Length: 451
Image 1: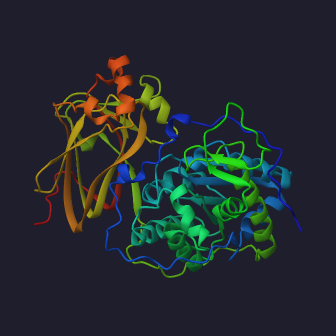
Image 2: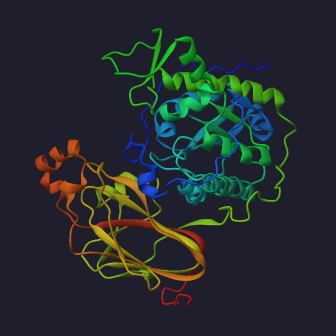
Image 3: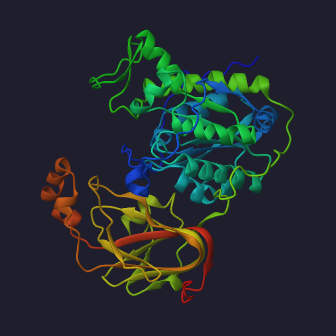
């Protein structure tokens, strides 16, 4: 039996580090909150690995040699140069005749909702053989019904594009999720995702089961101050300093070890290589038809400029993720989009130089939304949501307002000194936008909303 080992590898620099934040800010970006009266799903028994239908096509191709593409779709834990890096290096050693390449598709602070919109651009377009999907921590506050819809949408998009693509769900852990694991069950988000994994025979691996075991036996401290020099061999192991993001030297090594032995188990359970069946969906409202549509000139009014990596630092930083980037340079610049469907959002940036936009849906009163938040001493990818709507025809108008946000008031207290030291960094009043995130179909911009 093959025994994977992801030890002995060395980490390499993280590509496009500007897109990977250490801030767990999904709820802030998406505006999603768990209703107080929302039903709690059944929490499934905590098991480290469920092989289910295995990864037969991936293993067959890896053993045969040739090009093998592995995609990592997730949040900041996956974006870090940790388990992702270690696992790919381990696969290269396990299957030396294959030529492995990585499809890096992790963005810090984002969940499966944005994942469903961007999986086509960031993953499917690169023709993966295996896709790891990691959103259990960032989806922790998301309603279960939405997790089902978004995760199923991700799976169905991948399989529609190529039914031979294998998928593996991986679940990471944060401090608030440890209580459920200590009771022997998966937390809510992972439990919900397991329903999708069951339905589509997708293997799953929960890194937190081993974390919980080591906390219980005293060989791991989940959160603590990082020493000047972290000793990876120390007992107890220091897993993280913030209760979310594992240290590369310790927590990420543990994650990689769990994945290595889980892949060995999954390999022994693998069935014959063949296209995956596409069962009827769990939810009719799943996000299989989620679209990421680059903004075009025809959608814009007023003073906009399409920026490029050659002439704009923001475009240079986010070129790996955003298909195009437009900059609204003067107040009054508008983005106008009409659509037939239920949901529209804008793939944009938050940052110190951003202004306030007004968002109007159909004939409702416009709402002002600052594109800077308490964390914004730096720039990062974000999602500007316009809310879910009844199925039908809608028009959205988003305008850059003349009144700049009160940035000193918005920034967290510990970030305000940066504004005082670097006022020029915050002086602009602009808006960067890249794409439309749509559940529905685009219509001509002058299409009238349904009455």
